[in-house]
Image 1 (tube, rainbow, N blue to C red):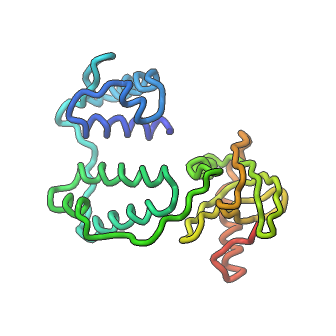
Image 2: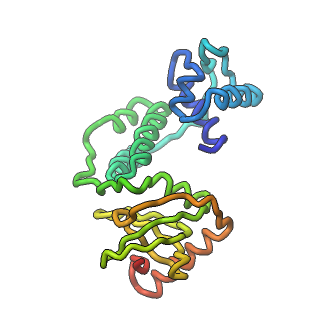
Image 3: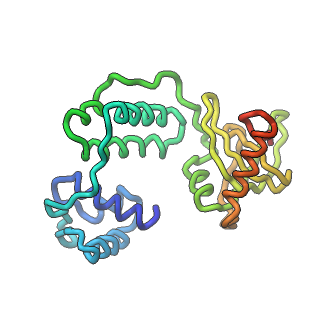
Length: 235
């Protein structure tokens, strides 16, 4: 988690807690070290965020501090509820958990009538979720796309042939039957799509392709438009 996101998360944790929260509790929730939390608390206090407390006892956010409120219409609130429900069907565990946190944060900022729309059971996304792929951490793929880092994968094609690929991932598509990662394949020297359920191994390489991601996405989209299809070329 990037530092800016972590600082925001710490404020949210303290704002929603209503009681002192220890650095250890925040560290476990954010999956960082206690030392990182102590540094972040100090940074927030230096920014005049009214956090009080001390090590071993816990921290609280002094009343009166508010982040800018989010205001939605009833229709916008319903769109969020349905969107988060659909999100949980992607088979992406991290995104599913993030959906719950999104609703909690929005609920904390909404007036009571709209908060009821978030907690009601009037809207549902029906159908089975995308099967999860044990060999692939979709969170890792999304981070590689954001950070523009190459991935090393072993891929089994439709004919059951297995090849080792180095790809530059640029997009992740959640279809109803499977998730697909789109990337520039160095073996094929072109944009290819890889069904997650056919990826046997997936590892970060530590090798970046900084500054190339957006250009590769333009190549991918141009291929869609030229081919008249919404699916990229197969692997």
